[in-house]
Image (cartoon, rainbow, N blue to C red):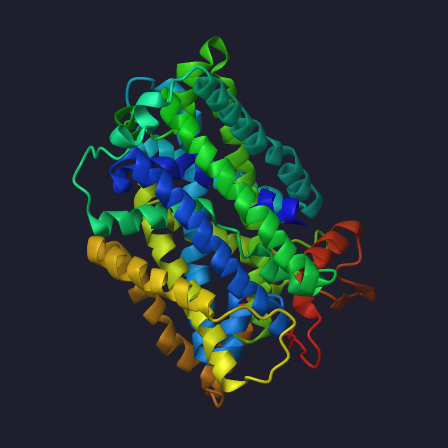
Length: 491
């Protein structure tokens, strides 16, 4: 299980974040410290989530915890920002990474054109949305095949880095006197942004909290997965960055939007084509995986009445969540209005950390409100306090450094407040409003040919084929909560 979590954490971030970390850390030595500290903070956050995961054994991760501890509004805002910002922005960054690594070898002396990057990222997104809408089996096969790309690329980088270390190529850049020599003035606000950039590469550390109900013996396996996966990921990321600086100066690294391509050109010679292909395969699979799993959160939100019921429906024959996929695709295409990946990472990183902190604070609140609650895993309160101190530093100085980018994320989150009170909290809505929603849902069902999982059509249960079984297994825990039923729209 630790290796599964390890594979889930490692994604396209390690191929795009090193530049952002180096640029904001201002020196090689501080950049490596940022990678190490981010790994430690990630491990602390994962331990806090482990206690919450077995104390509130619901799938859905921090959405479920925030909703249960702080109430429906807080849970809705977590879902709202995930649907409108986090999922679309993550997918946009991965798609742009894919297009950078495909196009950079074609433009060896300059950056690829922005319009070309956005166009290729859009084509990648549309193609994979079509694959996921067409067949669950196709989507899973794409994921299995393309996961090998990131492992190959990282293995090449680390092996070549070890070769360079054995040749003594790291003595100059990694000795303390030179490693901490800044190429620009140190700035605490920029250091906070360096942590945001690094945290993007560690995304996925809370994956197991989204499938808590599926875990066998979670009291043992959840901490074990944390202790195996996060140190291993930190080790891989630190060594990958050491490998980068054995072949490139900080200036060369900052001059490239595809650092692995530049690394390959420096060390692999005529075989340098392996690197962009491996990373492109990895990022292509990353977009596919994000699209494939996004329906889990949509289904959880629709089940709780926090999202339109249409988003929880699947195709009557293919059993693919077409409405959720189309919505995610459209919102991600809107994020491609910019090709600046590092601005997008700051944007999504700030919002992610905001709710990570709220969730960890919920652990302390739950300890105070319900001290006698059964907790199969119980950690010292010192860990959430340490996490929240780091969280406060990160948010305050990130907002100081990027007030527009981070403030925009907060503004989008706050737009969810009136939506919650009008759409969820207000029970006695006018009949004309309910009729309008029912008609829109009906039109959406007809357009996408979708129904709720398990509904019958012509005497045959929708979702009875092999592909539907795969989809049911992928999100089964979200439909097994006792005492809760999903209302069906009139069809």
